[in-house]
Image (cartoon, rainbow, N blue to C red; front, side, top):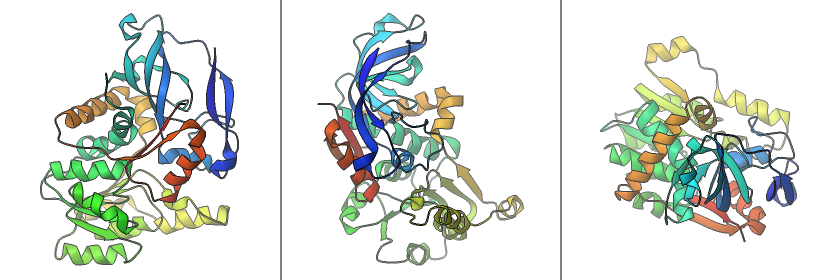
Length: 342
């Protein structure tokens, strides 16, 4: 079966990296469904993959994409036929940047008329936020929580999930136009790291307290800074490495990125009663798909109960994939970026 897709053909700037191509889909598996996509979402891992910095990505040429919204057109022999014709939100292990997408039946959920932009705000990024805040090591009442990239897709949801738990939230942003959104979502304090040293400002705000948790998709030298701010029972959740983007010196930049993170001895973590939690939702999905499903259902329910909201940061058409990627990579985006098929 053939389908149109946006194919990552080469590493580098988005203007040169992608091409619209016809690709051949394999035979539908017995536990798979075929979805006609109306829209798909972007995640920062897509940007990392485009720069050749995400080792989980398939070899080139490949089709990126973790999530989409569309109509189920076919089901495998072991899938309920009732799924045919339903509008669903679906996770895909790559392949989401296509008009027809195959994925596991346990990776879809019916969403009826929920707008695609909202549904996808709650999918990969929503599941990541919920897994960290409520599953792997839950936030507790009165904890002091730092959220990096607080106006982004994951960060904007983490603010709300942390406030829902009764935590004090310190939102780290990179431009003043993001301050209002962070405050609107519930952040108690907002720190612009472009105008002040965030670790210095945070220490002043904490006073005689210490951080309980840091949610960090940046890595690099922010790891050392965050670890010094964490108190006993402090957790550092590492779920990205955006500081690696933009390195101009190839291998040297990568080595510096690793060096800047520092070296952590397990005995030191034990003695200080601190922890580092690495989060890669692709690995969780591979080994524990039921965890992904549960997190998604919880996020959808929280949204339906008006306990959280979403922020749509941009809606593009498929012929604007370059602009969509550039916005996400720029660090200027807020909330979720989605792409609709023409």
